[in-house]
Length: 51
Image 1 (tube, one colour):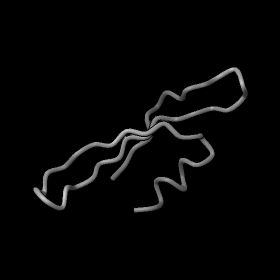
Image 2 (cartoon, helix red, strand yellow; image 1 turned 90 degrees about the vertical axis):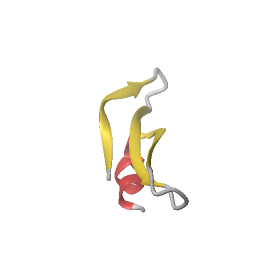
Image 3 (cartoon, rainbow, N blue to C red; image 1 turned 30 degrees about the vertical axis):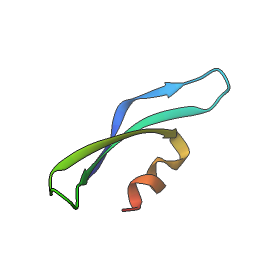
Image 4 (cartoon, rainbow, N blue to C red; image 1 turned 90 degrees about the horizontal axis):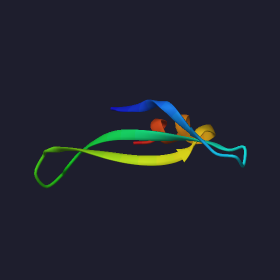
């Protein structure tokens, strides 16, 4: 399960970025961990679609 943070990160170069937080389960311990990444806004749907 993943969610997109509401605020997007904007720069003066015209590209807008989004911070994406994804929950992943550790295969070793079974505990959940959160991974945060900053990616270009156009690629958010592609990033969330992959597992």
